Length: 118
Image 1 (cartoon, rainbow, N blue to C red):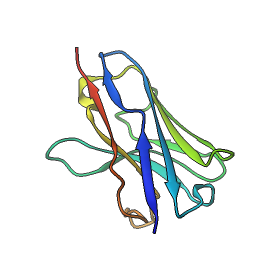
Image 2: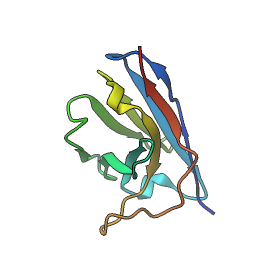
Image 3: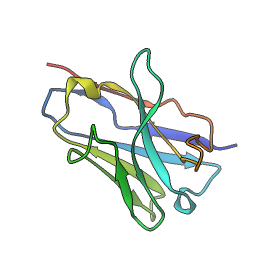
Image 4: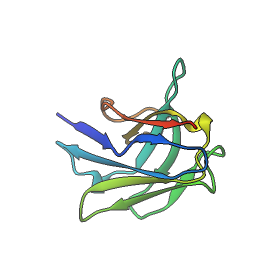
């Protein structure tokens, strides 16, 4: 049974920074392309960034230049460094492994809440 665990969210002022982390039990994340997703109230999950096993990354236009995804294979952890945060970045943030048909491999974890507000 794969369990994804996200952490590091919080309340931050516009323009601030935050780093969220993703670990897992039941699977070795080092073997997979991993993505960070977010879900705002009333909306579906959207992918904001992904990183391959070799470190190639992708970003949604809405976060390009502000967010950076990374992976620490020694810790089996995926990170999302978020900078220049905006109120519209407010959402629950999740990690998962994207598939070729735009689905995800595993059940969603609990996510970590990021709230950008003054």
